[in-house]
Image: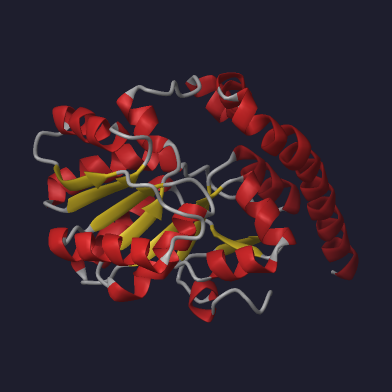
Length: 269
């Protein structure tokens, strides 16, 4: 177990599957929702990370990323390659838990339980448009704020202080941060200690998905692990290097390493 992963992270009640040292909760989407809203009822907040292949690549290769993500309270697999790798390891995760799907589940559950959401980041106007779409579906939903200021990477002390002031004023139960990684994780890490009763989740481009500004891949592509092709076709300039140069070779490395680890375990048994 890497020393950079927090003791609390590894001691949670959820069963864990480790992929290259990353502790992923072996839970369903429903269990994640039950946990977060149960913790809110108990007056406890937390930080959920929905980790995809790129998160795992950076976690495995960069100590600073391990330290950053290791400070979270719960990590789940948002990416079919991670689910496939867990199966090859012989410790299958039950399903993919995608941040782009959780935003709808958060809205539905928050509306039914009287919890409040705050949308931070995304493209200008995307958070506001997403809030409008979600309120149309669940009229009882309370989105107490949506802002999309320019944020540095990592966020400056002045930027963190501005967000901190806004959250103290709005007092949300859940904060969804759509800045992309690692910027959204850096901001959440800087804020977490001051908001112990708030749950924070990085959601990447999800506000634009909900608002209809970026088309999400069809369900069959998401379920078969081909969503990245759809995303690449939409944003080749931004995503080509990440997907083709970094993530595809790393996927081959990941599958090779988990197969070797499984064979080693069998040899030792």
